[in-house]
Each structure stands twice: as structure tokens, then as C-alpha cells.
Length: 161
Image 1 (cartoon, one colour):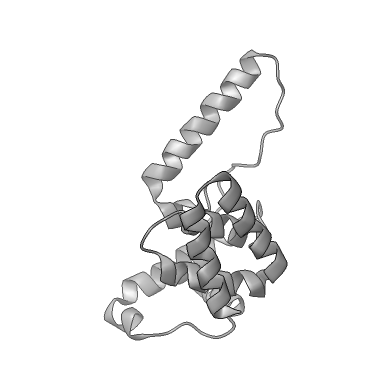
Image 2 (image 1 turned 45 degrees about the horizontal axis):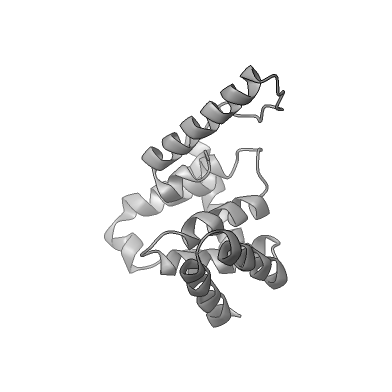
């Protein structure tokens, strides 16, 4: 949920964390012992985050990321590289593969983010997910969430494969 705030926004992440907190608290009151995940803050490298994030983004995409949008608004390019691919991707709690799977989950159920979903399907393949694993994710999405979201995700996957 910490990783996903960059994709779904702070309000949704805070709501999700509050829901998780409530569930864990109720389970504890019932005597159920859950293993706590590591949610400790990770120190940001600040000056180094841009360099590390640029390297991470380049590795995940397969080439340096540039474009007119980033020339138009250099601040968003810096934030994507330094914060998302730098600070967040340095957190040890999730592998890049797991980060991408959680990102696919979030983007697949959101409207208006087809371009980002397409990019993250490609990044997912570079981070270690296979096409059959992504197809299994889409089948699960179809079964437990929404057929239309799954159909849209499948259409985008077919376009890039």
C-alpha cells in the first residue's frame, strides 16, 4: 500500500491502510496472531535518489525515458525518477517483480490509465513476470473483480505481445 500511493493517490492508500489496520486490530482482539510486515520508514537518499531512480527506471523500461511531456514539465520527470523509481523502489519490502504485479492490479481497475497500464505490462515483463503469469492475473481479475476491467487489460496485453 505504501508503494501504490504513487499510483492510486494518498487518500486511497490511507483508506486502504485504515481498513487493513481495522481488520488486523479485530483479529488481534479475537486472539489471532498475525505476522507484522515491515512498515518502517526507509531513509531517503535525497541527493542520490535522482541518480538511483534514473538507473532503476532505465533498467525497468530498457532505455532512458525522455519525451516532450517531460521537457514541458521537468518537475514531473524529476519526481518520477527521484521519488517513485528512486525512494520507493529502494524500499526492501518488495521485489521489482512484486511491485509491478501490485501496480498492474491497481492500474487494471482504474479508468483512464490505459497508457500507463501498457507501459507497466512491458515493465512487468522486464522485471521477471511472464506472459502466462500476467494472463493468470487477468483471469483472476475477471473471476473476482470485473469482466470489463479484465477484457481491457487483456486487450492491452495482446497489443504488446
